[in-house]
Structures are given as C-alpha cells and as structure tokens.
Length: 50
Image (cartoon, rainbow, N blue to C red; front, side, top):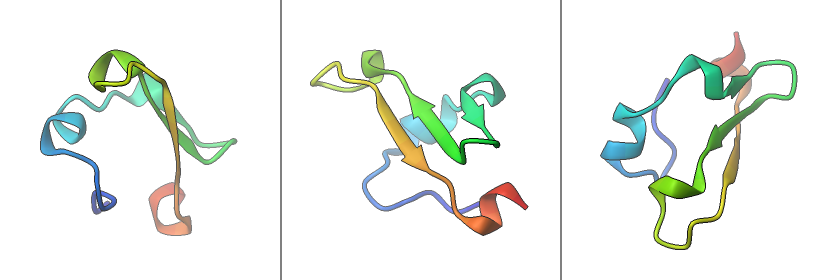
C-alpha cells in the first residue's frame, strides 16, 4: 500500500492494525500525532482493502 500524499513518514511508521477499519474503509490517525491534535480518518482505496 502506498502512503497517501501529505502523510508523513513517521505517521506511516506508527500505523497499527487496530486503527484500520476494513468495513468502514478508513484508517484512523489519532490527533496526538498531529500539530492540531484532531483525529483524522483517512479513506482507504479498493487496493488497500483487497
């Protein structure tokens, strides 16, 4: 899976399966990893959930 544009390498390296929602097709990135402290739900592509 390729990292989406704008996602920093450290965010990719900290990914955990517990943050992946295959049914909802999203990846939850907790706000604690961002300057603005807001959670971010990244939509997953067809290839990512295949």
